[in-house]
Length: 133
Image 1 (tube, rainbow, N blue to C red):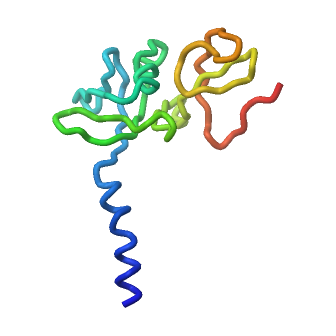
Image 2 (cartoon, one colour; image 1 turned 45 degrees about the vertical axis):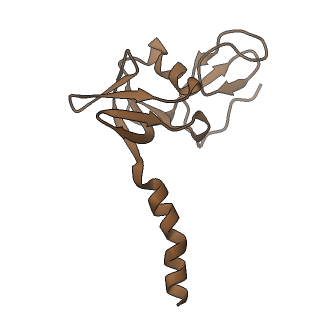
Image 3 (spheres, rainbow, N blue to C red; image 1 turned 90 degrees about the vertical axis):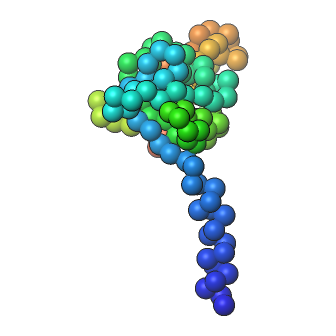
């Protein structure tokens, strides 16, 4: 009987993750990803859309994590889950932005909330610490 209970505890986790997928391709203008010649239209919350609209990333080897919406559409997970990745020289790095003045990291482009200067695109290995002043 104990074995059955353990399996029942795993069931919600399997159902929750059923629609999740990671897709890697070339990010292009218009919030689209080209994967093996097929175009996938991307959608998500405002912070995610700001990243997709960042011209500095267009043409890059890009990976997104989200839920398949069917018919070539993918809804990207919330920015707090860090669902956006870029490949630089074959290395998988998290998409992030850095303020050189305030030493503040954000995950979508725009002005630093502190000094109001534009943040710099700064892909980062999630296992390395931020720079210190």
